[in-house]
Length: 92
Image (cartoon, rainbow, N blue to C red; front, top):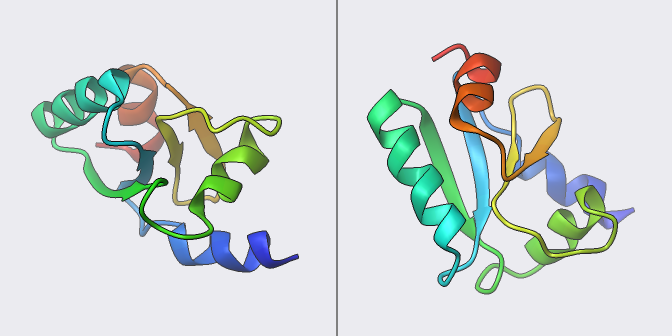
């Protein structure tokens, strides 16, 4: 399964997240602003621009391209999480 191989590339280091977004997503902009305020490190990946990433998002969301989808250092994901969950899960 190529998605699993691709996923490995996006699992972040401890203390940060990988955030799958689109350019038009208001929820994404809001969560980025909150993560900036809380000091959460993140790498943003636009699923409309990076080949193969929409499929990764779909694999976590029952076939839907729902963003923001975040991947945590343990390889798990959350879709449109509250900032409190993000902070707790990365230990920021």
